[in-house]
Image (tube, rainbow, N blue to C red):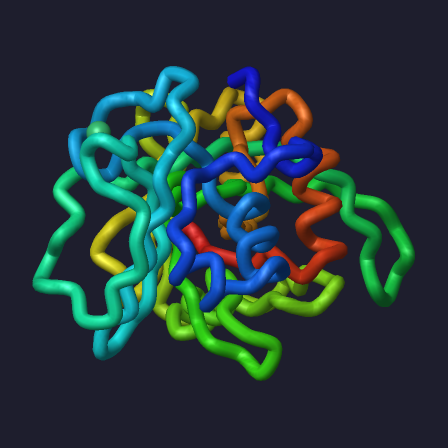
Amino acid sequence: MGWRKKNEPDYPFVVDDLTSERLGPDGLKDLTVHLWPHECQTCGRPFNGTRAALRVEVGAYVATADLHHPDCCAPRWDDAPGPSSTAATVNFVATTVLLPIIGEQSGAEALRPFLLVNPGLEQVILAEFDEGWRVATTNYYAQYGLTGGGSVLRIDHTVPDAIAHLGEDHTVTVRLGDLRAGWTGDCGPEITAVVRELGGIVVAVSTAIHPALDSIVADFADAISHGQVAGGWVPLS
Ligand SMILES: [Zn+2]
């Protein structure tokens, strides 16, 4: 994974004039933090260095921004998209880590297991706020009981209806209530033992992180401080 987009001088995506006008500079900048050009959402093939085209669809219930090869889908803003115009599968990335946590009451340090999830590399949910269109990942996952958006992640809050499951092949899977998809991450023997001992794992969801990058722990802390992480405690089923 050689790309890290936050500090790129040039805008990394191809954008049409209408999208540029509707999003404004801050909305465009927000997307550079939250979209990761892994695979084209029309053909499913990697970008391999091709600059991705940005498509925004504002439907009746949800607005999305996603990435395509410019030859597969020209950059555009659609106010009334047809049903299911995205053909390829959005990729998620999940990884497990043990992180030291300071207890609020005791002040003592303890290790907690985390499943860090980017639920959609190439597609994000947008919402229109007072300041304009912004990525709304944390708002979206609030409906599944994850909390976040402040500069602190509340990891002891149990996510209602969510369950975690340890697989025999050293994996952990987290499922959230009505969300049909589950996220699975590799989980070595050390983390497996801690999850089993504590009876659960913290799930932390953010589109501002790429859990497969070596810099993930620092990136995760940075994303929390910017209110870009939603999470909570998920008990073992
Ligand atoms: Zn394509």
